[in-house]
Length: 491
Image (cartoon, rainbow, N blue to C red):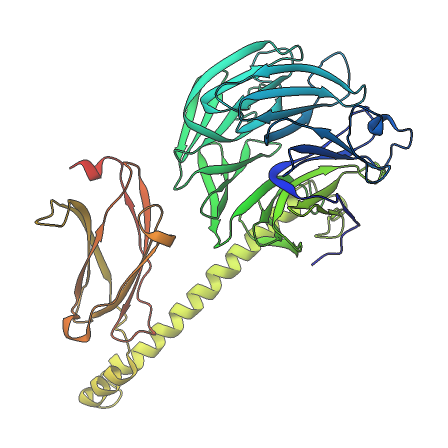
């Protein structure tokens, strides 16, 4: 746990996913957040000259640090960034169900207003591909659009479903940004300008995306799953009963490698290693997290991690130098790699020692030189000893179904001896509710063979992890992994 370096309150309820930090005057960080009252509230603690609170910008002003921008519709997306290449000042861009507004907060002027019939479900500001100027990239109903600082629609493309999340990343490391798009059809697509160069299918709507400084990006799903991809390879994923409200890439321990910061619907904030998914830090807000971002909010020359709850509670963290220690002369990330390797080796050692003890225990009952064979068999049955050469055999086939049972994929599990299968736990994405299925036959129906029926909803490859218990429930036999290949459900 860590103590926040600052806390404050926005004094209003905040919409999830509509929180950002910007330098509207080019120098001082401000928090901008959309509220449930169709307003955008801006907290600027370093402005004392009234620029943000003058008449016409806000209808009310709770303190000298807070100002509000009234909207005529509910805000669906909020973003800020340098959109005009002629200045270093950030512009505020607000999306609704039918329109897009770009606002210059520093001069209190509307930059442009555009009708967007497909709506704005997600938004990001930055350079895309070979375009020379920054764009406000918005995703709506199966569409992607890019607007410049004058409101010209200079980029347009289509995608498979409603867009839930966007981020920019140099995916192929060619020096130009690609657009990563998460949508309701469970797909993560990578656009190189208007061409799709990669497509990954997940198990739920992709509600969050976060780009790292290299080719990695984090993602969050509507079912509580978060994970990290490195280009086409998924490095890890974890699933929670809570929903990931916001994710962000931030260098937590100052080692030069960013961690994935996740804000959850129960108020928890955690940071995980981008390599392994190991939790490195956690804290709790009093309410669900609305957004996570970063900025030099204390004017100390370094960025703080800033987390905001749906009730307007804001906490800032600065972890560099507090979590993890970098040894002098060691390059960025080197120590973390060594620690990850050490943990992996230690885990393998513990697994091998446990397996060795199991073999040694089984040998006591299988060695003919020790005691009577009949006594050993009786004791073996009583204590549930599994013979050392016991193996779990698996097979996969297509069952065309019958009567009220539709066609399905069938996995057959069996042991290579007389050991009976007491129960099977199957872990698979997108097949079972909660991704877990338990099969526990009645005592009168147990045998050394068991069939598991799978009903995939989509025609995609699936990793299936199986745990089987034999003879007695407390003994785990094996944990094989099966991959159901693409198109097998069509057989």
